Image (tube, rainbow, N blue to C red; front, side, top):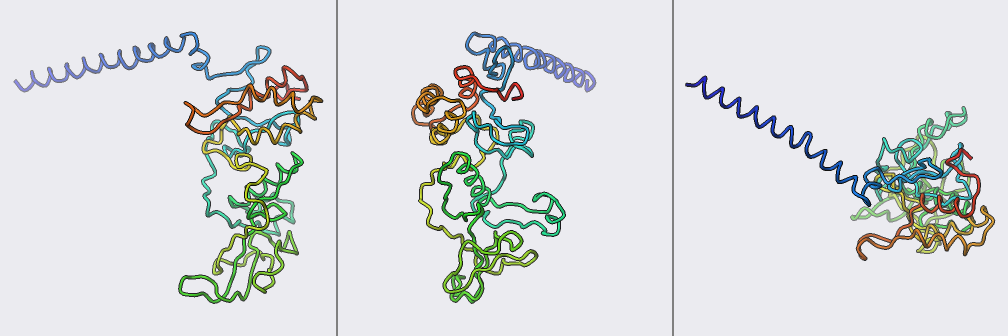
Length: 313
């Protein structure tokens, strides 16, 4: 009797396995594939690829860079937002962010001896804080676009304007009378004159490699930059995925004069194309307006031809 029940249970389990294998292993994938063939959905099911002259140049859902072989921005193209996906950014196999938060304001300095020996900053151990990354990017964008790159909490050299204020503290932990002040993100090997001469009457020092300034009160210094920088936030921060295909209309507008000059057309001609690829908020209230960079650049190549990055130019 027990053997019979056991056989029946195993046979029922086997039948359930066969039924669900057919339904979920074959039927469901076949149904989804057939739905993907419906006109209007087929393009999206294939990855929303954008093709030019029969060649796929990218997906409208996945961002990419528009740079030369050395990583320099191509002036005739709108640039995407920064990316932390992979070593050089926009690596779809390494999607992700930097994992740095708003409290990341102090850099990890590189070894001056290794830098002097010709090592790269990263190989020498330099790890920029999120604040310094933002400041550096803001300076680079400002230089590229010929615009004001000043940003709160950033030095003129493009690093985080952060002091370690050392001295006796009150009950709340605030320094009462500074005895020593160090600009922690300005190593003495790279600067002799910190961004600030004096802090509460104490001369500001550059940071010496190997010294620990964590015993001081970390003080980001806002500076005189306007509260709303001309370089927008998405131009200096990476998305969570590192593969954002869109930029803000503000960042797009900032790039119009450069792109127009490189393509030998007027800024208004570029803006007319830009307006076609500006999307509003989803459902009218979700998210922010965006501009798809790949679609915009491809249309510019069609209307105002120049050497195309996808042809290796």
